[in-house]
Length: 130
Image (cartoon, rainbow, N blue to C red; front, side, top):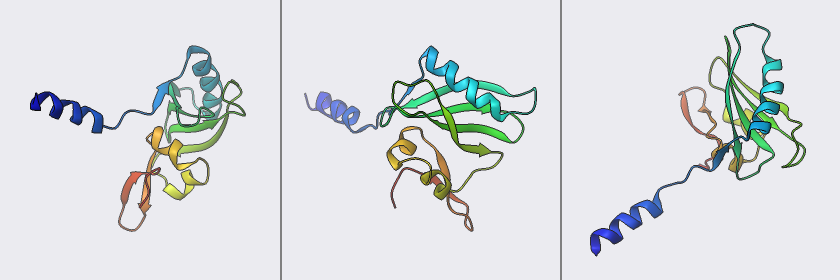
């Protein structure tokens, strides 16, 4: 009995993924806007994740030379008219850049990492406090 309670407590304490895979229509709309960032023919769209904290925000996995992803936003949770509001280039960006573009809960959901202290090179999830 004690072993069952310990296992149940372990699963209850584990953090759940808070984003979801984009639907086919959402993914097509995100792909369309994200690929406009690319000027090279080797650009590849590898999928999209939508925040469950705020469905207006999503992350597009777009890979090319000097590009690794884009934060996109739509006017309403049901709209399929996305626009790019942030771009992850070849290196890791500052958390202040991402926090100016999306709420902390969204950044945490989408697991967007950034530099906290550029001098020391410390990185972490930009949605976490502290």
